Length: 191
Image 1 (cartoon, helix red, strand yellow):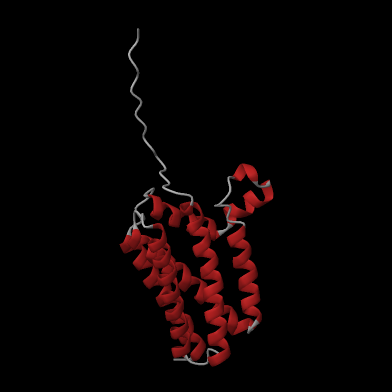
Image 2 (cartoon, rainbow, N blue to C red):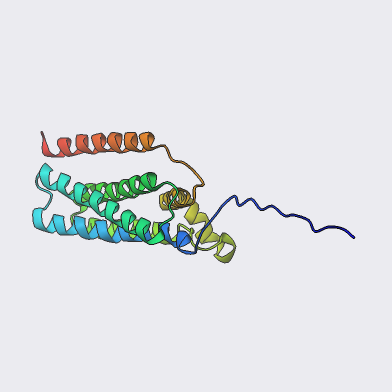
């Protein structure tokens, strides 16, 4: 008689619970809604007439990104790379605010509708919740063009340990993007 065989399992993409699949989508959606609300409110209150109002809006967007990701971390409790997760959430919020502020300069309040439509479509076509076999091919193709698809992928990998995102590189990107944004603001306001 043959003895029982020992089976060893190596999990390559460990997902502790179902919430990990939804967390990146929720962060992208809350970022879009939260940052758009912040930017629209600040546009209404200040009209982005001063550099200070622009920087305050970007700062509030960054705070919103921090709070959103921190709450998700508290709910899930098992985030493999929490610092990278939070920085990525902040980066997503700040970039969203920058896009909406630049669009506001040229389109006024239509900017929020346009940004909401483009970024909202991007969130929903990002295809990171359902397997690509369950959605139609057009949605699958559009999802690959969506920058949110890659942001959601990076957020999920921060959650599950699939990748260790270099914090230094993320901060460098944030600083470079911020300096470019500062240059655009200075150009617009002549200072």
